Amino acid sequence: MSQLSLVASAMSSILDIPVKTYDECIANGYTISPEQILDLNFIHNNSLMYVRNEVNEVEDTFLTFTTSNLIQIFVINLSGDSQAIFVDPHNTVLELKYIIQDKLEYDIKLIRLEFANRRLEDHRTLRSYNIQQGDNVHISLRLLGGNFNIDTCAIKNYCIITEDFLDPEYDYDFTNLKDSGKKHYRGKRVLYRRPYGWMRIALNVSKKYGHDDKWLGCVGDSPYEWPVSYHGTKQECFNPIADEGYRLDKGKYFAYGKGIYSTPIIEIAEGYAKEFEHNGISYKAVFQNRVNPVGIKKHKGGDYWVTPNEKDIRPYGLCVKNNIQTIVLQDRY
Image (cartoon, rainbow, N blue to C red; front, side):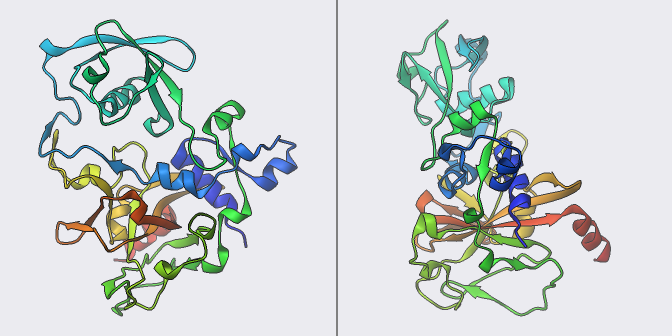
């Protein structure tokens, strides 16, 4: 039985864009553009958040200025309206995006900023672009993925998911399975903590990564296999795993460096899982990934992994669990 409609509901919540199945569009007479069809490139680029600022300690989340340094700039939104915002010229473009997300409720993964007809790069400071008091910064939508075009989806107000987004041959239902104590391994004897209590819906990785799938092996001691990790799907956090992972107390961060943060323990990732509804039932969603063992940085006793190169982490499954099942499991133990 196809899980496509369930995945469509999950992706609607994760991406904050309505996602419709292809059959639903046909049945309701909706127009279909190839640029609306969701692909794995977009998922990889926008659901595995990359921590780019390497800092030792940052106060007040992302705002590191004193009031004497503030200037007022104007952010022009997609409708052409302006919003006055106070910033420090030493803030990065990424930090400005988070201010915009907080004040204007834009998803920072789906926008880019422009000043003087120039696209702004996340890691650079506002001062480096000579942004001064009273200047205008414009919001536009990002163009990401292969043929997928977020601008087209925004205009149409939905994107489309097709059957070949999934690879049902490799679905695995862990919902009613329990940890018996048997150890499982992926990669060169790296412990694989199976997602007990979850349904793993396989993504069609061959369209993105080709048919050389040794990295997806399940032998357990192969030098070609990559170990398994999990990544939360909430958009609200700077990085769904790392945000709380290195917050030792409110307003202070001790970063583990640049990269994509994930965890080999799905119970940790569940704390950052996006909740969504499907057919009146509430679910949680977590991405299951394979991670290139070369270059992994492990922290907090190996509970948190940092992958510096975003090409070295590959989502290959979406794990979902309904909240009724969660309550039952909590009552049982």
